[in-house]
Length: 365
Image (cartoon, rainbow, N blue to C red; front, top):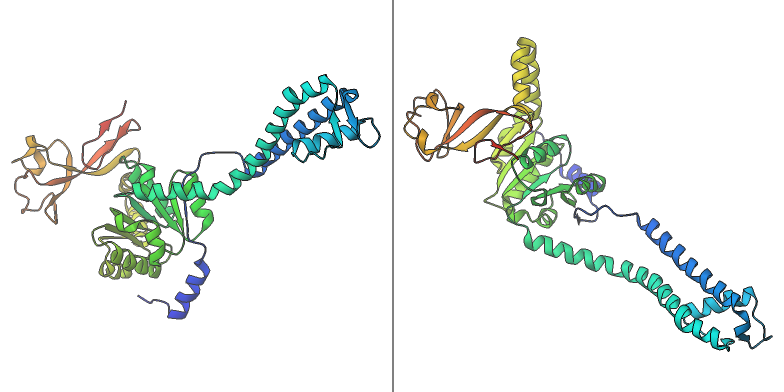
């Protein structure tokens, strides 16, 4: 495998060097400009209504400059009153005007202040609320799944894992593109913007507490660096990585990956198989696609199957997981099934069926 030199790596890091931040899924709300515009419109409406009230009852007010109150004076009085400036040059002198000030102008003044001050406080406290939400999210995050790269491979991996029952709140996406992370957050996933080859970025994704890590980067050399960094931070997590070239798979395993998927060679084999046997290629494509048709699942052995042969089970068993070994269905070492064995089977999935990783297909209500 040919890794780029230190200069190339430094350039790549500079390209992806952005403000490392965590994007949590947000509720669908109006854009800030619309919210501010609405509040300003309400504030202006309150100002106009107050001015009209004063102008209608202008005989009950006294202007120290000329004694009369016209429409401009009413607008001026409404402005200084609602803003609590109160110069005192225009004052209510009649009983009706004073009653109106008590029961109408004062509530309008309070409403005006709530609109303006509330908008200011919301802007000032937004960051504090976000920090509090982020700290609460980090404290509650345990045994989650970290996905590095939210491209075609990463997105498909998340959909497959979530189809087994994993909640979206238990998935954290790491990607150097802020737009990609925003797209992930829009779908309900938490995201971290930054270069995953940097340990501080992975730590923001709480990779030390993660149960499994999926590495689906665009470059093989980046996948190697991410795998090394992730394994250094978390020795117990299961790391699955994807590479384009098959010759780089051994290097990924040496870097700490538990499983390596070669995307280019897998696609090539599927193409070749489809040419030789279109029906066989169709079956393989059905197995790869998740959600309907045939699917491969791993499940524990049930007591009724203990002591039986592989072909005596009700399911179509392709492999037996015994300890740390994966034995083929025709391997003589399998013998009879043991209680601690796990079976890898091919099952039929329908839209109303949920496949859990540790059970048989469970029908949904």
